[in-house]
Image (cartoon, rainbow, N blue to C red; front, top):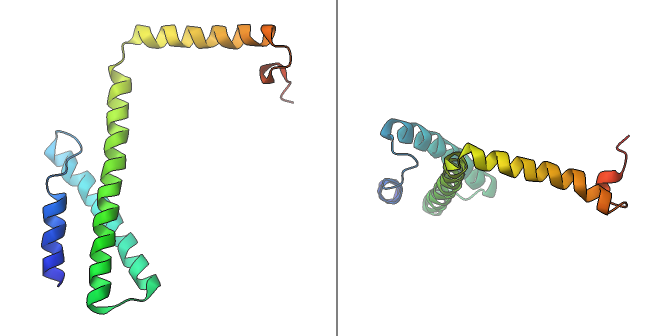
Length: 119
């Protein structure tokens, strides 16, 4: 049973990649794999299901956690790449608009939270 589930795990996780660098991908996937293994092992031991059903449950949890962690990490990396692709002048304009909003907003609305003293 272990061999079959191991093959299914390899087939389902082998096409996944996070960056275009294979060395970084192997390192990150290895760390995610260790995390998924530890979490799945702890959950199955806590539930106290052993044998073939425990093995199937372990591999199912492991695949689910691995793909979930990969997806979340991929979204974070895509978000960082998007933020870094925005030109510097856009960030300067955004910052100036935010500063102006913070300065002008309390004057128009005297009961604003920005007018309250912190201490």
